[in-house]
Length: 267
Image 1 (cartoon, rainbow, N blue to C red):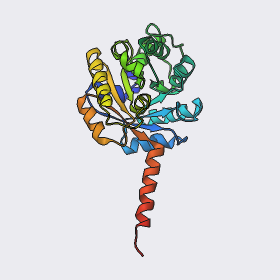
Image 2 (image 1 turned 90 degrees about the vertical axis):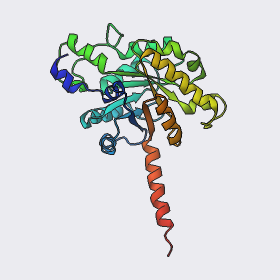
Image 3 (image 1 turned 120 degrees about the horizontal axis):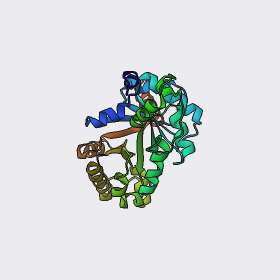
């Protein structure tokens, strides 16, 4: 890879994970303006991910936020609403440096995500020159495509019981970088929504962390923004990526605290 490509293709998430450092992530579901990228950077986040699965953002809006994040110096990821090439390749072309694929239940599904996210020979992603990741500069495809493959993060979500039953096979899939545990969907499928103290939750993290450690992959924590005690516990177990919460949650929490503070003043 040329020095020019090295200077502009930096995935801070992959870099920190490779160093064994904890990654702080912010989820974007509400704010449609590019300002959210600068706010995330100012707040100290390493990355943000636009949650297209749970919001009404268009690919255009998502791409604008991703490009703003690139310029701000944090890594933009996108959770796609469906694990199909028409979403995965388009959000990557629009500026995302990685995809978060929801509801992956098998190694075959994980391989399909990798194929959509990676250029040949690792996948089937269609060639596209002048990407925002490259600052719209022109590089030979023989140089740019391998560099983009290396920089692009592929994360599959472990949020179904079926996925846990196949965690070893999924973790072994070449091209998968991280497995993000969707704790809320898991507890819902078990019939205990929000019961994070159920022993099956800790067991799911233990099993996923063990499988990822065996295959050189990383583990992310999702859905535990209200339980910093469990976040700390699972980080110490080996899960290094932490989804801290949404822009909606942060705004409501800050507004609520201010309103309560004023209303508590005795006249």
